[in-house]
Amino acid sequence: MHSPKDTSLESLPIEEGTFVTRLTKKFKARDKWEHPDPREVHSYIPGMVVRIMANEGDHLPSGAPILTFDAMKMENTLTMPYAGVVRRIHVKPGDVFAKDVILAEIDGA
Image (cartoon, rainbow, N blue to C red; front, side, top):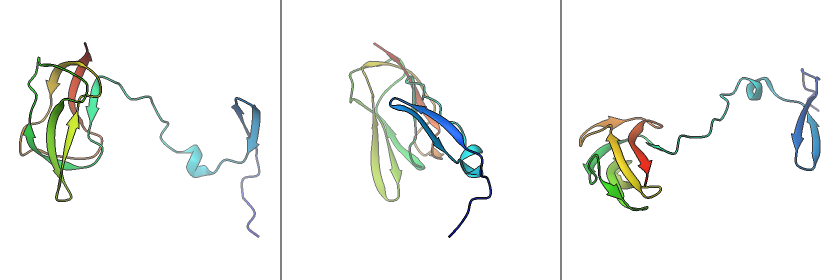
């Protein structure tokens, strides 16, 4: 039986009441989650831009393609998450990018 080194308990409020548990050092040291900015289109995996279908200033409906990128020998298309205006495109064809990079900025219609 493994016994935890840190025996202090933490209280976590939940809808039904309060949950009491032990939190690991790894959990306590994690990066806190922040709500993403809905105006930023981020890469969800690393890749390379193949083509850009939208232009800055374009008014596009929800689901319209913004750009296509290659990742792991597959083409993926990023689309508008909601109707809006493409304010800025941060990449160009041939650019290689990492995960969680801002690829484009949009504003709601």
